[in-house]
Amino acid sequence: MSQVVVISGHPNSQGSNANQVILNALNQAISNLDIRYLDKLYADYQIDIKSEQDALIDADIIVLQFPFYWYSVPALLKKWVDEVFAYDFAFGANGDKLKGKDLILSFTVGGPEESYDPLGYNHFSIEQLIYPLKQTAYLTGLNFNRPIYTHRMVYIEGVYNKLEDVKNRAASHAQRLIELIDELKNTPEATIKKFVKHWFENFDLLPSDSAFFTKYLSGDVTLSMPEGVFTGHSGFRDWYKGARETFKPNCEHVVEQVTVNKNGEDSYLVELRVRLIADTFADSKLKGEKINLLVNELWQLKVRENKEVEISQYSVEVL
Ligand SMILES: Cc1cc2nc3c(=O)[nH]c(=O)nc-3n(C[C@H](O)[C@H](O)[C@H](O)COP(=O)(O)O)c2cc1C
Image (cartoon, rainbow, N blue to C red):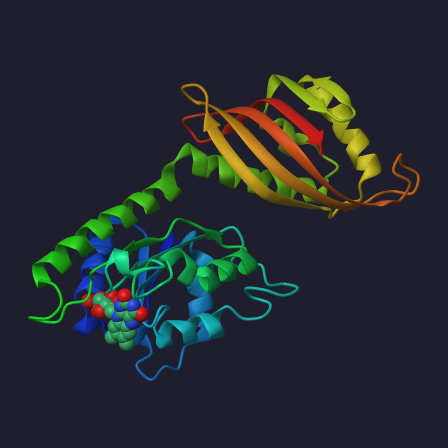
């Protein structure tokens, strides 16, 4: 499986100075990398939507690599987004294929930093100008990571910049991008965030067997729930039995916020804000009511060397 897919949106990669340096550096540094040069694959702009979607399905991290053109992505990359992020793939009833993957915007900007300022000739900040892409990520469930971009990347001989400076800036841009990719691939924070997703996906199903959950709980776990305090695996099973008698399967836990704070050598305090949307059973305490509530959760956990998570304290507070 290719873990990192890079979509190169430069319309003429042969003529590129900056983007090409970045792509070459990525190629050397990252394993399991699929660089898709849109200009080479689709010189006629006729995008093979299925093969692009398949490449995204295989990826954990998606990098859009492009030169900033007219405050946006080049037309070829815009066409790629328009066609590949299709209904029932990226949005709509079954459109969850991008959900939870990491997105990185990596782009080179011609103008200097000070021009992207209310008093500069570009007036707006880069962060403001990329809002449409940020919202595209939100709508499709992609994790929008800090964008990597570099100014003064235009080279016109004798007019703008020295070629050597542009290439040096491109090399340091590539370093920052590689660091972010490594971060996303390897950190305990990444492991925890993936685990949170996995945990709630299973919770949504409310399986009859609680073994999936107990395997991530320490033997002496303390669970402080709105229903009371429960201890150990048997305590979890008691609480879970009550949850299964109350909530119907296929409920929805929407994780609105996850903050991971390191508080020991391999220990982490994880703060979560989660919205629970669920139907309840008529004969339960909630009497068939439809629930839509926001809860704060605090988990104390360890990440083992094998990347297994073990939760020792789990508390839920209804807001
Ligand atoms: C059609 C076109 C539009 C551009 N629009 C912008 C722009 O809106 N803002 C900016 O700072 N630079 C702009 N530039 C400069 C490019 O961002 C810059 O040349 C590019 O990032 C250099 O990368 P490369 O060497 O890989 O081509 C534009 C360049 C072209 C050709």
